[in-house]
View 1: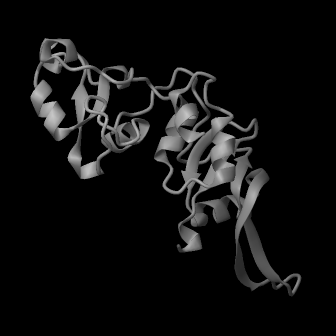
View 2: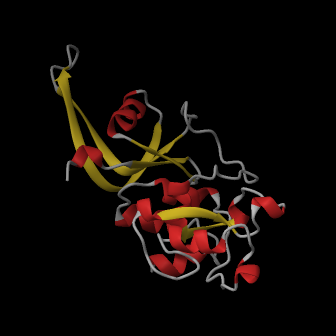
Length: 196
């Protein structure tokens, strides 16, 4: 694995997870003096040119978790009423790529978004009304509720908190980043059981 593909978890100064950054964005924040502190595992050391003032080689050590004291262009402070955008990749990851009707795990291409209460019956396209379903189960259920289709929903859909959503967006979450994020999940988060 190319070390530069590892993502850096950015938090605010209070430690609230905000977003994932690539190494270039993280290096820019270090260079601009916007990193209040860093923790976690050192990921890599970026070396630059020789400083005309000091005659020394410039370098930046990038850690897996950085806290910034100023807002970054992409990330804003955490809004506790924030509802994360619904996307199939995040939904499938929330449900661990399991069809919540038959209980089997599938590849991304074999899954679909199912509305527990169908749109045709007044359902809405929100986290609390959608689950991951294999295409076979979704076709069988069609425009019916699980009860009408004679199938059982295996888990209750939930809206991820901001910290849970940051986890769902991560590509390769390192163990120290995972522990940090889990500490921000609600106590009763279904993700705790899966990630233990």
